[in-house]
Every structure is written in C-alpha cells, then in structure tokens.
Image 1 (cartoon, rainbow, N blue to C red):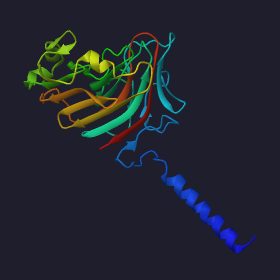
Image 2: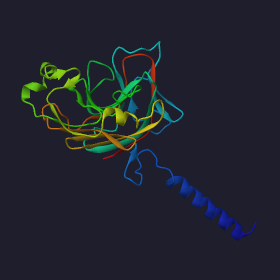
Image 3: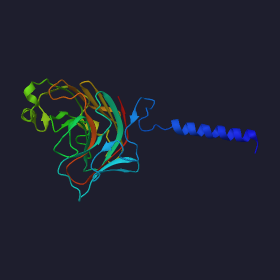
Image 4: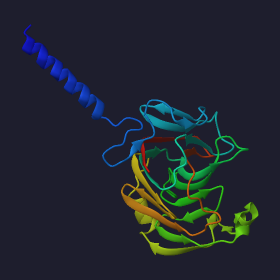
Length: 257
C-alpha cells in the first residue's frame, strides 16, 4: 500500500471523528440556538424519581401508571441540574387519552410526600381539556386557562399561608386575577394539539412573565404580580397524575438559561 493511500485513509478517519463529535449535540453541550439537552435518551442520569413509574424506552422519558401501580398522590421525576430562574424549555410530549401530566417549573419539593412538587405547571392532559394552561400545583391552582392572557394581582403577606391561599381559590381557579387579553378560544386552540401523538412545547419564562406554547402557538400568557406567592426560581420536573392507568412520554428535552 502506498504512503499516499495511508495518508488519505488517515485523513478520512479524522474527518469522520470530527463529524461524529460535532454533528450531534450531547448532554450539556449547547446547540446552535443556545439550548442544552437535559435528557440523554438512554438513562435517567440527571433525574430523580420513582422508577416504579419512570423509565427510558425507545429514547423517550416514559411515565406510566398501570392497574397495579395506581397513585395516591401525584409523582414527579425531578431534574437535578439546578433551580432555573429565567429560561426557555423545549421538548415534545405524547400522552394517552386518559392521561394527566404536566411540566413543573420554579417549584419546590415537599418534605412529607415523596417526589412531590409545588409550583407553576404547564398542564398536559390526554383529553386536551387543559393542555397549554398555567396551573399552580398545590398552590393557587389555575392562573390562566388556555387562550387567556392574565395578570395575577398583588397580595398582602397573609396570603402566603395555606389558609390564605385556599380562601382565594374558587372552582379550581385563583380569584385574584384579571384576564387582560385573548389568545383565541380554548376550543379553537385545542384543534392545534394532536391527540395521542407527538406535540412540541416551548416554555418562555422571564421575570414574572410565563408563556406556554404548544406546536408554536401561544396557549397561555401569565404576568404574575403576586410577589407573596409567586416564585422567581425553582425545580423543574414532569408529572404522572393520580387517576386511571396512563402513559406519558417526553423527548428532546432541552433548556436555555
């Protein structure tokens, strides 16, 4: 074999190594838009949850409840990468018809309930009744329904107590809020969300403004002026909800801070 032949084989090998190294965005490596993958598609590395309900399957983060594993309280798998303040989160979800899930952010972990979070949630459900709305888990409940731009009104210090919060919740919605605009009717936006198929989500969380997009369309837009109950940073996690057997899947999870 000639020296030139060996030279070109070596050069080709180096090119393939470079392409293999930089052609795929690895966990912790920024893509061209500045997003970093937070789920590697192979393991639960970097996440903490009850493996009775959470696993990796076909490259997806899967949460499943079976007839044998029905829940008594909602259970989350929690990202261990910090407590994001201002950020954008992108990914995809697919959920079965009877499923109920959500993406929690700026949340706190409860000490007395395993894998439970309290905080803002981008709601997701299989019947598409709530997908896209802003719901505060174990807190002020619904802050904005799908199709709403809403302002959460300032509160006094006593409103931070559990009793104070409950007093201002009616029909599973926070009463001290003002609807400031329409993003479209809930029913019209519902037609843009696919049932039992993959949907893209994009959360844009900056300061006290919380925007939830599904398939590129703004579904809810909250301005939270409640400095007593609102949070500016916290944990990130995804949920399986109390109820009938269900399966939810997430993939391509990535964050920009």
